Length: 454
Image 1 (cartoon, rainbow, N blue to C red):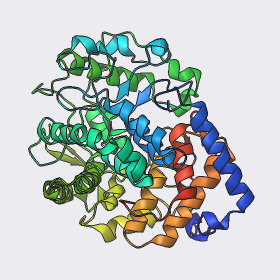
Image 2: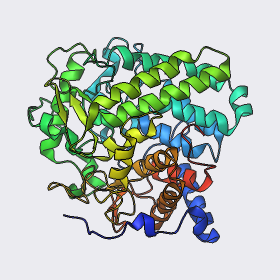
Image 3: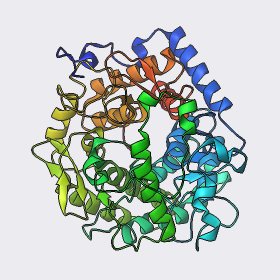
Image 4: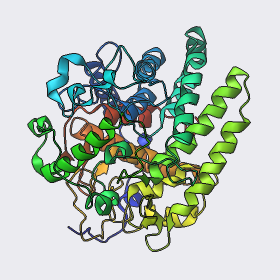
């Protein structure tokens, strides 16, 4: 499906949340808070009560960013709960499982058998995979929302060593290419599960896992909106192989090793947040700023002039996957990133927002395999719109950032906070009452500026 070619819907839209009638903003805010209340289980917020009944890693960081406006204490608890699932090697797991909901999501804790893997936490069941490292950024934002409450709870003192260990895991165990960037070992680790960035590598992966998998996700979302059984077969095969090597990152023949531009951009931003945290604690911070600068420099190797965006580097084959995705424009988040002018032109150009899009499409709208309704193969996601607003403001495009923020609020509230939407019409897809949609809409309403560290 190709996009209509016309003036950018973003450019034509009213500017900022202040342009929305106050009564509508107040209603959207109250409903967003209600979603977060309903999805709170006492220690953390589930992404959605039906489709996603456990705690997800990067979801909790996005959720905490919104929760800080309602209750900084609860936002801190959200992150405390996630950090409590850390492995001895420093990794923060993709999922911490609710033992009462294990049949409601696949793969569950029975698949991962994490407590049998050396170095995993003894008191909770987790996945062995990870997700993008936006956690230090979220911790810092929660602290800034109420420094007195943070100090009372020793929030930064407790979080900082865990976050340092997490980043050290990425720096050492996950630099599989020796290029200064972290590699992901599974599409799920990117957060953009079935992005076209992974197609070429997945084509070489067997789709016949030993595990007989079920699809409880299809009870909550139509099959046309979710990855196929064929893709799930490959996902499970990769997860099995990783699990069967005790998730130790030392499988020399592992077929899926990619340097994702979004993952590493959030890593760099979170290193800068660690520097802020270290400063607040009176500890040395230079190493974190140096590491962020190293990541920014290493990221430049992912730039594709053909795609006019950053691609994903296939470590196994030594090749750059040159496809324009939302992952590849979000290095704009990183201070000092090269090719910023080109990335801004791509984000605001006809393949993304300029294609009359209301929110940022997840994939190049001119690509032959673009699909406006299928998960990460074209639809617009609220977390990516929020990150794009931050990135635009980082480069002085405040008006566009505010307009994108207004669209986040309008579209989130219009259809009960959907998981993602069709880019041009805003038609909702996936599950509803999705936590990060509610949280980031709340942040768009309450934000005091779109700067990276605010």
